[in-house]
Length: 307
Image (tube, rainbow, N blue to C red; front, side, top):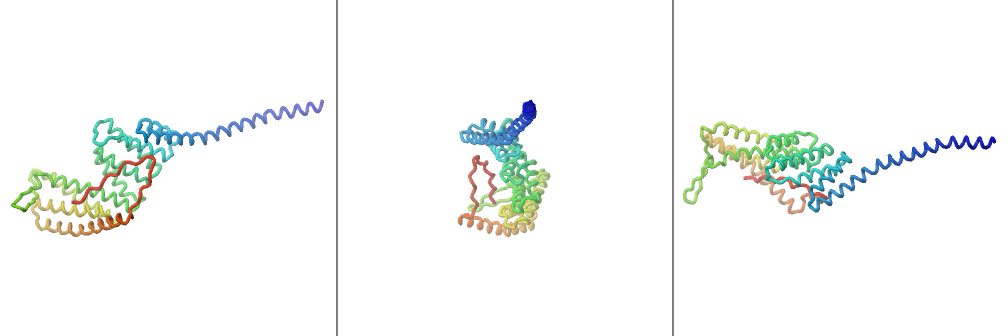
């Protein structure tokens, strides 16, 4: 009888212990699945994203990429895939609101990438390209200036940003000075004479153009201070001197014009030296190779050529 009571007591003790053990095991399995399943699900979604992208089904690729991001918001691959897909759907030169919204969505997605990887060069450049394409000039300038002033970025990349701004300032002046009513071309036999003029009614535009040139010199000098071997900075500085010479001619300042042209030739020597250095490096195969990606990034904008 005592034995039966003892066994019964053991059985009653074992029931809650077994139940507790089973519950612990169940919880452990659930925790393990919670840790493993989302990761495997993200991988499945990313594979589906890549497959849909390769076949050109961007809507389906977007759906899978958005699912991957929702499953793991910290996943860098998912974030960059989604940004590239949104960028790929944007159509250059299509000014419809729907298309512009695609560009804005891509910008937002690239900005999410930068919250995960602040040094992601693709995201930074893509945002700059998209701002330029949808004509958000002020946002573009602010975006590039932010990079130029960021001490956490390498000096070379900061110099590139300053050079980009110098290029925009040069373009501001070039568009004004090259207008047909400002650039007067006269042919005398085999000779072609070019003069630059401005009317009194265009004083406001003229002063604004002069400010563009002043800003451009500041941006180019900032770039050179950070990277003395910046070909873009020296090229734009050369072209800015040519613009300054044109504006001086419009004001009738012949001595200033001659001085600006002299400085343009001096800086042009530096620009030519760096251009030749780059050309030789490319011929010797010293240029960096781009590693292949599952989803190729959109092309970066081309730098304008020096005049």
